[in-house]
Each structure stands twice: as C-alpha cells, then as structure tokens.
Length: 212
Length: 320
Image 1: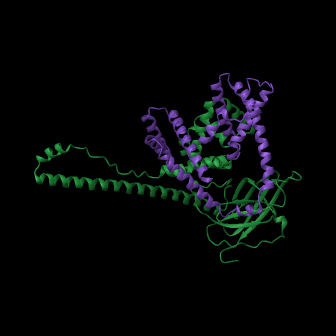
Image 2: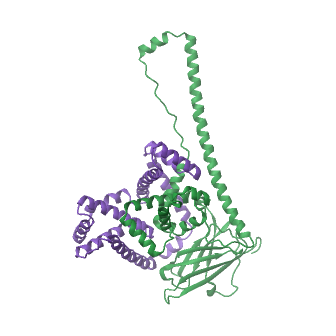
Image 3: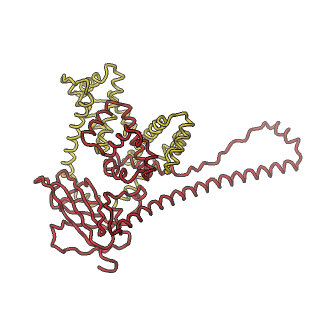
C-alpha cells in the first residue's frame, strides 16, 4: 500500500537522469503515445507491481524499489530496440518482475546467513516481542485517532456502521447505507474500499513517521 | 462460523471474487498465480476489485468471521508476508476504534439572541410568579438533559462491556475446545491451530524450552520439565545440526494426546553455536507427558531432505 509520499514520488518526473531517464522515456512512449495517459498508466502499473511484490512476501521497505527496478528494466529493454509483442506486454512485464523478485530473494538469503548478530539472535527471540507488539498497536491506535477525527462525520458514520463485529448486523447496516446513499451494493463496497484505503495510507504514513 | 462466513463475504457467491480470494489465500499453483497477476496488471478494474476483496478478507479475519479452513490459509499465506502483517495491524486497530462507543459531547446550542428591548418588552407582560415558574421549568429541562446525556454515556459503557464479555466468551470457548481436543482419546487431526485475533493479543504464559535434536544426545537423556502453572504454553528454540537450504523448514509438534500442530516455512537463524529455529504455540497448554517434535528441511550441503526428531517431557504435578 502506498503512503502519501510514495504516491507523490511515483510520478516519473521525479526520476533521476542518466540511462534510467532514457529508459523511462521509452517505457512511457510504449505505454501510450499520449504523455498524460502514459503517466497515468505508469502510476497504475507501479501500484500494481507494489501489490504483486507485497503478496509475494517482499518486505515493506523494498516494495517501491523493486517496482521501480522492474519498470526501469522494461524501459531499458525497450530502449535497446527490443520489440515487445503488443499482445503480451503484461506477460513481459510480469517476467521482468519475476527476475527482479528472484534476485531479491537470493540477496535476502545471503544476507540472512551473514548478518544476524549473535546478541540479536538470542535477544530478538522471545522476551520483548509482546512488548514491541503492544507498542506498535498503540501507535496504530494513536494515528487512527488523529485521522478518524479528520474524516467527514458521514464518512466516519459510514465506517462505523459498515464494519461490525456481528456479521448479520454488518449486512443489515450495509444494506441500509446503500439504500440511504442510493447506491448498489457493489457501489457501496467500492466506496468503502476507497475510503478505507485512503485512511490506511494516511495512518501508515503516520505510524512510519512515529517509528523513526 | 462457516455460515456466517458465507453470508458475510460476497466473494463466495461470485466466481471472479472467489478466484481473487483464492489468490490472496495462496490456493493457486505457481502458474495460476502468474496468470492471475498478468491479468490484473492489464485490467484496472480487476485490480481494484482484488483490493476490495483483500480488505474484506482482512476485516473478516480480524472480526473472526472466517471459517477455520479459510482462517488457516489466511494465516499461512497472507499473514506470512510482512505487508500482510501490517495490513492486519491496521485492520485490528481500525476494528478497535470503530467498535469503541462514540461518546458524543453534549451539543451546546446558543440560545436565540433576543434584542434587549424585545426581551424587556416580552418579559414585561409576565407576572413574577410566571417568571419563577418558567425559570424552574428551564432548570428541570437542563437537569433532564444532563440525565439523558449521562444515561446515554452509561448505555455506551454497558455496550462496550458487553462487547468485551462476548470477546472473552469466544476466547474461552476456543480454549475449552482446544482442551477438549487434547483430552479426547481419539483426537481428530488438527492441521493448524487457529487462534482467534483476541487470543493473539493476550499475554500468554510461555515456558521457554531449548532443545537439541535427539540424534545429538544420549538415548533417554531427557530431564522432565516442570510446568509452573496450569496454563503454560511452549516456546521452543530448536538447535539444528545442519544448514538449511533456503533457511526455512517445517515443524510438527505432537502433544501427549496425539494432537499435532504444524508450523510451516519457519525461518532459521544463526549465531555462534550454529543454526536454530524458534516457534511459539499459544494454543498448546502444557500437560504432563511427552511432546515430540519433528523438523523437516533440506540440507544445504548435500541437498537431501533431513528430518530431525526432538522431544521433551512435562512432569506430572508435584514431581520433578
């Protein structure tokens, strides 16, 4: 999931010069002849790649780097004059992502053998884990407080009614909300999903700031 | 809970969403997974829908709305990723916040401002007795309003306590079920313990147990351990006498009653004494008897499958 910063930095113009810029130009042209549309495509692809790497178990701090690496490699390939068959562009991109992922896991394995310090190996095991979890949970709650209060009252009320511990009550509340807002159930789900996603993005950025 | 799950989650009724849930729960083969990812790279609406299903799956997990099999898959696959853990951490916090009662501050509305001249003129028509009566009525209304607000606050607190009690009751039921399974003479094989989300935040009383493989010690060399309380759970640290290929292995713990608990893809760590893995079993309450552990992994040197046995014994109460 992207933070606000990540979203801002995902515009291709924030890329640094050299060969990467050239590769990016090729990639954008390949995505669409229209510059604006190409940038939108690029941002969507980047977000999808981040999600793909997340589901494949990549650590949160490496997600963006891997997504950028994938797009840059694809661009570099295009810059060399390689033709990607138009029927299978996503299969090609997926293949590049697979290579990037493979290299990531190989590097992780080597690091795991080399880098675990002795004292950490014994200390990290048991004792402070629960305490760390509790502190982390508290950080999530504090950040949520900050952002829940910044929601519009109707947004907060929608969240409160549509997420309920009792499944039957949740269904009834969602039906009532859909009727009230004159939305189909799928429309309500999409609206809730966007609202929750936007809240999560802000809260995660806050939690990460507080962790530092 | 299965029925609730079916009612609750739309992806059960919709083949496309069932496929999305299957992807998120790790039900697909590598090829199916790759095909699915290629499709969502190309299709924006499919991607957005997958994110919606993901959120609903996470929320159903933290609210204990998933059936046991789905829950197990979720824990093994989704929750095994760092990003998945963060997403669940957010959902847990959101659940806690959204289920907390809202204590609305009493709304203070400014009384309509009357022009002094109009007020004087208005009051001029009242007798002293009428003014006293109106003042008393006003005071009663204010007191009544205060009582109403206080009452609403108390109702919220009662509702919160009821929610807590329900959570505790669910947790107790899960523990009792676990105990019954352990005491059953013919326990049905339990593939993976499914702690409720509430259970995972409870502070368990763990007994740390360090073990070497049985192959590395003399036969019969087991000192029975004494569990100091009834509700102690095992926290294992198992030394390995080889280097794991890929540094991951599977572990099975068998309790004295024969129930098996599994942990998959455990990461091995390394220190000066060699490689080791750790695992906690919050669902296993230590009972007198012998516990057997098996670790399966691949040896990095000769690429052969290796199985390492371990065991420990818990002494009956009062014995050492």
